[in-house]
Image (cartoon, helix red, strand yellow):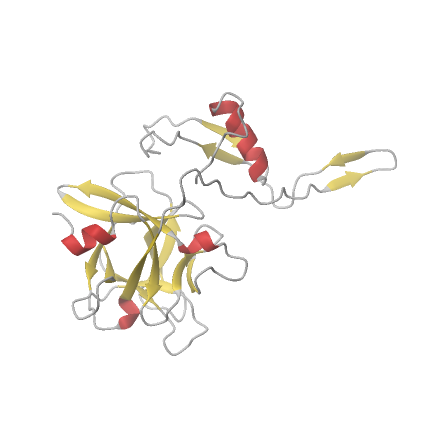
Length: 255
């Protein structure tokens, strides 16, 4: 079953958008831990990058039905339903970020619908399984939590969101990378040597070319390598060597 025409236009595949709470006026943001979600002013605060409030639409079809997935522009994870109860002060189930590596994964599937008595662009983010994405903190303004209300009603403006489409970057735009992280050093009486950056840990980096299908499933055989640094510069160097014939400066990463 296709999405309604109004939703099909708002949530076209590949579109970047923001979701603004109709009740709170703040935006759905992905938190830097890669799991949590919160409501923040546009552009973020507390060190959150502006991209944390931007989501890319990923459309999938299953058994003839069309679904919307929202892929975080900052941390590369999807808006999802958790089995956990929402934190104290929030209603329903916890809303989280999670990976998407299985076409049968229900947790990240959404079916947005228009709010019948509201202007165009006002939507309810209904989940495939049950419930509706909602803001919290109407009377406790310090509560900026986001959850999934298992009630399907649409009267409360806490369940309503305003879709703001983000215009595309100019062709050829390359984002400015942050300065390299400072390398900690240790020393003895005679020698200095670089130490491991604070909080560094071994990660597995999996990568695809931009023109390859987005498929990180267990049978996809996606190439990968181990990586320990926290430096974006070092990561680009590694990818440039591995996938771009050593042309590091011409390598553009997108996560």
